[in-house]
Image (cartoon, rainbow, N blue to C red; front, top):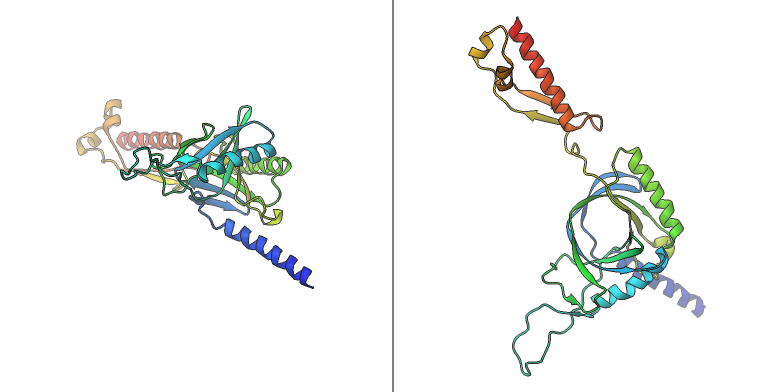
Length: 276
């Protein structure tokens, strides 16, 4: 009976730990589109600590984790200013950095780039300097990403299966892939596989028509002098302006094509009106 109770307590501790792990700081993003497990997200700029390792998809994560965890655990030189003390040889203490999520992994030619996101409270100027030359700090610009979320073990089979699903969803929904896939893991290694949050992220080109499918071009009506003539010369037509409402068809014409069509229609209308 006691043994059973001990096992239940251990399982409860693991599950509690998994829940707490998912509550740590994550990369900030805004969901633009959601379709079951698929999403289009706009990510804010952020900083990562990154290292390059050689090996299979599954081996690379383990190798890189030790290197990056060493950096956030104190294998660094703090950039914080230290008050003058004696002896002069005193150095700043190593600085510990809170763990964040996710741990990201991306193919870089024949290596894997694995990264930890840094807390938003830091900048490149304030983050402690890595002691290990294999750790680099870099700023990731804002970007739009397609994402698919799934649970399960950290296997290459699961990665490839969900990457294929996401690529198909991107194509079926009219988006354009703009970069290489990224594998994101949000939980500690001891988290049960069925509670893990894993994601595949693929950069996509921004949709210029996302916020609105219409645009107004405010202009000035033709002058009475110009309108008095039967036919306006081309130069007059070019200088004559009208209020044009342009409707951008979603994913059929580009904004420039739609504007060109609307302008041609407007010019034709001017010619016909002045020919009467």
